[in-house]
Image (tube, rainbow, N blue to C red):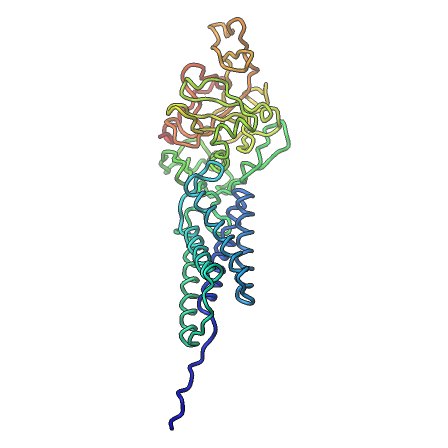
Length: 410
């Protein structure tokens, strides 16, 4: 009588659980890698990344050590929520701003989906525990580990990162100037202590303009910002102007919904029939900061399509400040102006313009002159700092010519 065949070494219920652990660890690694970028751009978004990363890491460890149906159910619910947030951010947008699809976020979402599907199989379906050949299980888990590692590694490649590399480089994907930009804060405008929206540039000390061989390119908010090629503008001034645009592109879209702006205290001046409509925030006008997209004195919406599309910020200095005391930033790329030709009614709506003597019709008043500057978040024929033209276009400093930066215009 021959001896029974020897049993092959086996392990209980390892392959699926191992894949879930690897997938959760991979998703955590990607979220940890990109958390600094999102923290620099938006604190709430960055904190979300950190919390999700720590959960995915802790969950992977717990499942690897002591799996349970409740633990699988928790992983299913949380990762399903993370996927839901990702879908909203790429379709209708969070706070009104949609995000572009990129490889890292797609990879992290795919790994989270693996966790959702596998956790559902264990928690809801209740797959029976089976034993699998040890050799085959080891090979399968080894291949899975290599696949997850390759996916995570590819997510760190700058060319696949969607314009915002891990560790905080290029936060927001807007600033191609080589300068560091603070995501929040404001510039000291001479009547307060706030600093920060325009960080010190890394272009150089501005000793020479450095534009002799540089060809100006049109301003496109979807491309790296490049305001080079303007004669007489130093590299320092160029960096200052580019940084102001970068911060505005990054933060101003929080006001994309005019209803949200009104809830925050913005009020229309009633000029929507002109094709653009200005909203003013009196509280922000009276504070001591300027050039801060978190507290913009005025918002500009296009009304050409029948709705309200946010197109620019209109930053203002302290009410009554003279034009010769505006922030000295951006050189000839930027031009401040005042509106001394508009007349307002008692409700704060524009109701006319001044006559040849600079006087308003009876019953209307001119507001106190306040220097202001536009920063456009979409292309404009006269560049990113173009002032509105036509009737009521305002007045610039004596001796200056009205700026139309066609070199950087659309």
